[in-house]
Image (cartoon, rainbow, N blue to C red):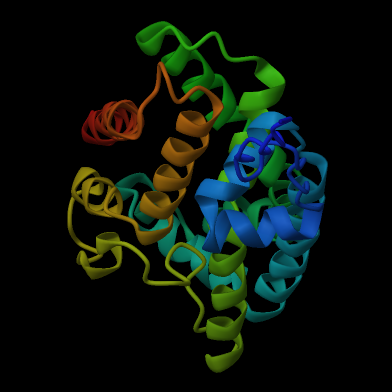
Length: 252
């Protein structure tokens, strides 16, 4: 009597291809479902969409800032912290501040246009090198850049909150250095040494969020060599080392 062969059990997902996440889904997913999103980015790296989105948002932010910030007053306040500036006559002070006040709005737009790309590139070079050197991950630059470009998406939340804060304040009352109180530096007195402010600013909500996303992304790119615990250690270790350099330079 012939026996009827029974079909072997099918492993879920074995015969189904994973549906790729589109660019908008990746940008939102980096913020709210990072593990699955970065796994998809690791399989098919991309970076253009978040860079374009963040650049446009950054330029809008700069436009609002130029409308709400009194650059002449801000630059004068910064200059008055220098004892040499106090020794100048009123006419000399005005001549010294004139060019800075004139070009400050233009400089803000330049930073806004180049900032997201430069920030993502900086993080890519630092952590691409760190994970390849310290973990032997053998990651490609394109994969690392795709991870970094999506890991800086928290800056979009910061920009939106910053614009809301600037519109809630009267024109001229906005401090461009502390628009959103996202770090402990906002609690430091203006008379405190610069290195103290830099040290306090290291504990920043958006930086911590970005570092967690970087660790998640690089772990997803090579989970065997970069388990999540190791990814967190390298990411935060590198950040602490960089911040100590910034604090040391400010102290000098």
